[in-house]
Image: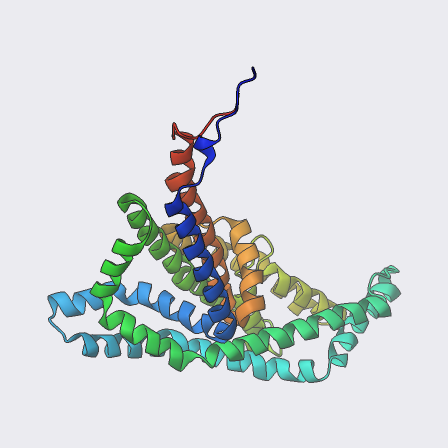
Length: 355
């Protein structure tokens, strides 16, 4: 007689079935809620980001200085609005004001590319910027700029909601932390690891990236002004924005600008901007990243690159902060999941091992 295979060890416990059903219901409800409240995602991410930054000052004011929680929360929110949010709104409004004519009249881009093409073809017989290629480039740049600006407006429009959520998070800091420690389905050590990693990531992305970007933008603006670039403020803002892109970075701004200045006859300005970019902005980039971002959290350049593109697509300019943060958090939770359940399953004697 053959040996009958025993399926008892493969039977699913009723408790697991109930858990799976419960999780399925939660997922369905979560998807429906997220679909309806998607426009608020930026506000919640902003509130969480500011909460992580303001959490320790809040504890200091309420515990050591004995401030009432609501007064401490309002003061910190006002400080964050003045120091962080208002400057971002101002820079975005300036960039929008400068870019609006190009968005409304894409032929301006075609004219600039045609000038470069004419110069290269006439002097060096280089014919890479043909009319059809120029049209394709401008046809991609303008819609992308429109979508980015639209996402930025949408994110900034949720500022009131962001601060409303932030207020309750700050005022109820202790209750929130207790709830997280109690309800996160991980070991105590992994819960602490999540809190520490999230804090480091928020500081790296919400403080490190903007600080480095502002430094490079200011240095770039100074150089563009010295060498007589007309729209030196706009070029400085674009330099700051491009600084968040790994590998390419600010090169994406000052190199094409140098080429355009050279093509249009501003030879000395072109050489000056190019040297300023390679030597000064490049050196400032290396020093600032070492002193600021590396001290906070070392995020892999590929995660930053993919996160920036994802974030800009979802939230506009503000996505340069949220995108890498979300992607980094995904990988952190994946590692913790493997640590919690993967290793446990590997050591579980009830799970049959394949020979």
